[in-house]
Length: 413
Image (cartoon, rainbow, N blue to C red; front, side):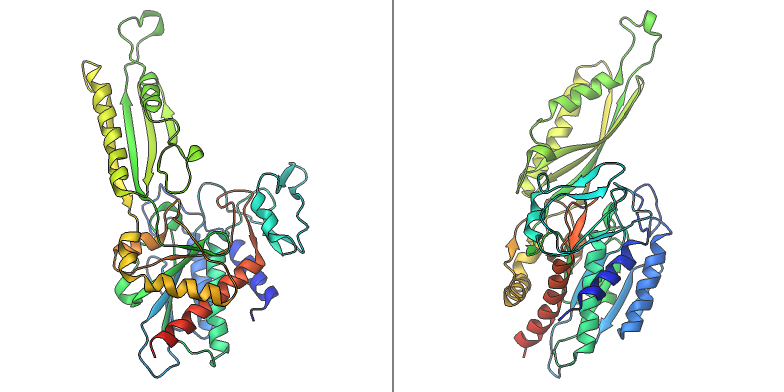
C-alpha cells in the first residue's frame, strides 16, 4: 500500500532540517530555523495536490483535502508538530538505516562507544526483522514529531492518488513549538474548521490516547544573605540550604523515576544557586484533577511553613497552570476514539489505549473546542541520542490515517 523507500526518504528529508525550539524565546516560532521546514512543507503540500495551502505569520501550516463524496461528512483533521525538543541537540542529524534488525546491540557511535541495546531498551525486540532508523549517537532523531508529519503527508498523498477511497473533507496542520508547550497557542481553530482532529504524536505502534496529565510549572526563588564566611555566625543565610530543605520536604518517591501509569509527580527540572539567591524550577503533573490541585497546594503550604521559620520571607513561589487532562473534553464525543480504534483493528493493529504521561497539542486544542485524541507515530526514546523509529510503524500509522478517513465517510452515509 505505502511504498517503504518513499516513507524513508520523506522522513530523512525532514529530520535533517534543524528545528529545535527555544523556551527562552518570546517569538512564534521560537526559533527562526523552524521556518525552514515550515516553508518546505508548504511547498510539498502544494506539490502533492492539496488545496487551500497556507502558512501564517507564526509558521502554522494548513491545507485541505476536499471531499470526494456527495453526502455530508464531518470535517476531520490531522495535526503534527515540526519543532524538536531543546532537551538535546537536533542540529546535524545523521540518520542511520538498520535493515532487517537482528535483535542485537546497535552501535550508534563506535568512537564514543554509544550503543542502543535491547538489554536496556527492551522494546527494540518488538521490531526484530524490521527496518529501524536511528541516530548516530550525537543528536536526537526528531521522530517526535517528524514521523507524524511524514505519516500525514504520505496519507494525504495516497488519498489523492487513490480517488476510489471515499472520504470527506480532511484538514491538516503542522505546528511550531509544541515541545515548549506552545504548539496550540496560536492555532486558528476557526480557520482549521474541523469537527474533531487527531494528533499523530504518540510513541509505539498501537497507542491511542485521550487522557493526559494536568500540568503546571512552579518557579521558586529563595533569598539568602551573603556575609564574609569568617564572620558569618548568626548573620549569613545560605539560600542553597533553604532550597535543599524545600526539595527534601517534597515526597521523594513522587518523582518521574519512581512513578508510572496514572501516578503523578513533582519534577525538579532546574536549580541555580548561590548563597544569596537560589532558583528552582519544577513541573507538577497528575492525571487526577483533585490530586493535581493538592500537589500545587502542598508546594504553597511548604513555602508558608519555611517562611514561618524565619523572621522574614525567604522563599517565594509562582505556580502557573500549563494544560489540563483532555479526557474531560473527549469523553462526550467518544465516537472519535472509537473510529480510530476500529481503524487500527481493521488493518491488524492491536490498539493500546492508555493515558499519556506527558502533554500533547491535543490537550490544549481539546479545551479550545477541537476534540483531539492522540495516535501513535511510531518512535521510541524521544528527546535523546537513543531515539529510533521502525519504518514499518510509520507505514502502519499512515494506513491508520487513510482508514480513519474512509471509516468516517462510511459512518455518515
